[in-house]
Image (tube, rainbow, N blue to C red; front, side, top):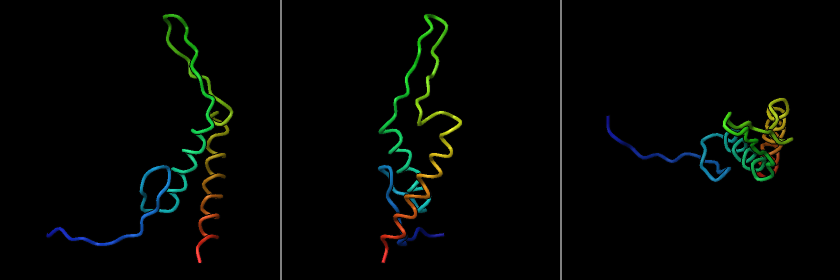
Length: 82
């Protein structure tokens, strides 16, 4: 088997290249959420640290926010294409 070169459509999102539109939009949504993140840590003097979630990264809300942002970015990309 020989090494060959071929061209492929590549999407950019979140500072990286992705082979699928969904992955690029998810990375862009993740970068957008991290840009506005207010998460913090609470130190319990010798007993470890506790992660305090912000309103964007709360485990109950994060999957819904990510899904909504990803679908919106995909819709915006497809609408901008001729």
